[in-house]
Figure 1 (tube, rainbow, N blue to C red):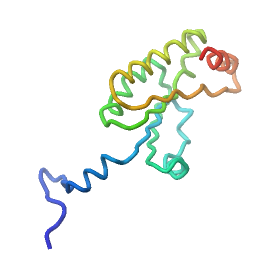
Figure 2 (figure 1 turned 135 degrees about the vertical axis):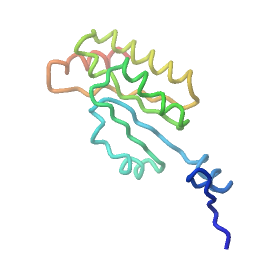
Figure 3 (figure 1 turned 30 degrees about the horizontal axis):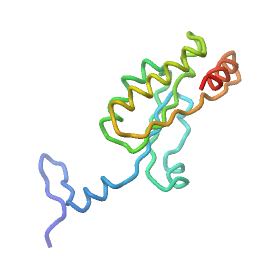
Figure 4 (figure 1 turned 180 degrees about the horizontal axis):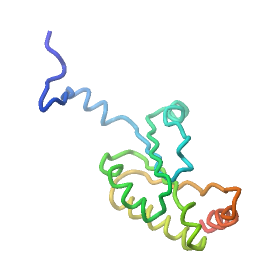
Length: 139
């Protein structure tokens, strides 16, 4: 019996039907700061009915996310859910944070065909909670 995998450079090759099935697979990637670190992609995937990958980058601000998002864009997911901005509230006014989030979403949208979903900032129980509310009202 012939194996459906052949080895080249120690990497298995998928058959055409497997590659096609993988390309048809719906994938959502959630990228963001540390507030998403406890989001379990497997549990979300069960709820939405397709694969969900969660990529937290603790401490990341909007500028940092421009670099962090590049490998995600290169994998061509169907949707990218962007959760950033909370860490920017320490140094920027809410309207500037909202504008920067929109700018980042537009940059990502221009770089790939994925649907871009912008998550609302999570209201925190610290000095930045009111600022997060102000960002939400800016959208």
